[in-house]
Length: 234
View 1 (tube, one colour):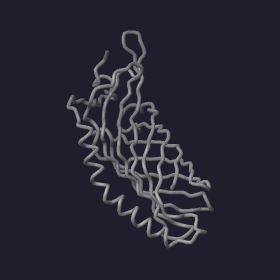
View 2 (cartoon, rainbow, N blue to C red):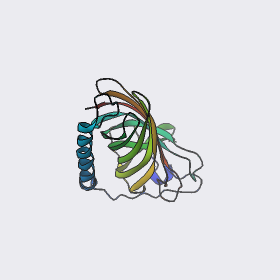
View 3 (cartoon, rainbow, N blue to C red):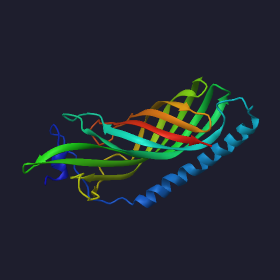
């Protein structure tokens, strides 16, 4: 089997790989602790807004849960060609803070998002698919504009914190892959999408996320993620 450097060496620009293992649990605790006060404050503010709003307002303050499908890859950057997409999932929590009744809200979220990319290669006459796994805790803070009751568009900055980076040279086997450290720990980008809110709390959501900064070091390649999912607002 080829080593990882050979697999990712495109257009004479190699990604040299490390075997250093990241402590996933400690990273999760650090990231969650830096955001828990922010989320608690937002939910507290939302509760006061709920009490102040009329029953007729359809952008009511509150919080919810969401999850769905990720179709993730990275852009071509300085490489000869872009890789294929990794299909996985995201799950997280969302809050809504109305600023203008029936019209405009701020929507912060905390999302666990499984991203990355795939690349096909051949070795000794056999075809394989290598999966580069990049998992993030993403914190988008979105401006949410209601077009009509139940239908809204949202956009805003997203702050991503890498919590896992591995490569599986054969995505079809049961191997969990090898730990790496070739991707930047912090990712900032733009998130934009649409949401349809049903009566009763259920909503569907589609979104596109794109990085501002490069993902793989010295490559100019950026995260590119399409999301589609469901959620419930309490």
